[in-house]
Image 1 (cartoon, rainbow, N blue to C red):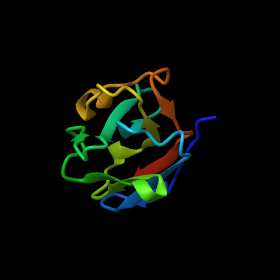
Image 2 (cartoon, rainbow, N blue to C red; image 1 turned 180 degrees about the vertical axis):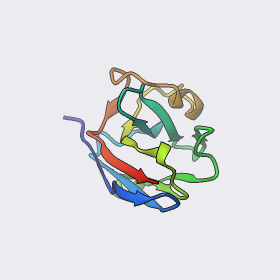
Image 3 (spheres, rainbow, N blue to C red; image 1 turned 60 degrees about the vertical axis):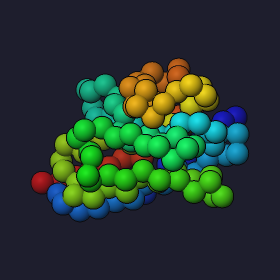
Length: 129
């Protein structure tokens, strides 16, 4: 009964901003890596941003300088602030948590299988040109 719930998605114009949140149960809130992933229709799921309990982060090259990942441990909540949004950012965004103590944020970015870790149901982000 691991539970991760995302919210904050919506439709915005190119150049706009959105902030996504992921509220986790205590059992779902990972002690190690957590992250945001996205999947557009017909495309493979890709890592967007990840964060370790140490505070270290990793970002996909396509979002560096525009997106910021953060978390509030007291609220068991993961955030993704997205600025300067582009049409190519349009996708379903998912949050995930991983239990492997050896996994680094960079390694977590490369995870595409839902068999690896716990995943939320997703929240849709649509950016119009």
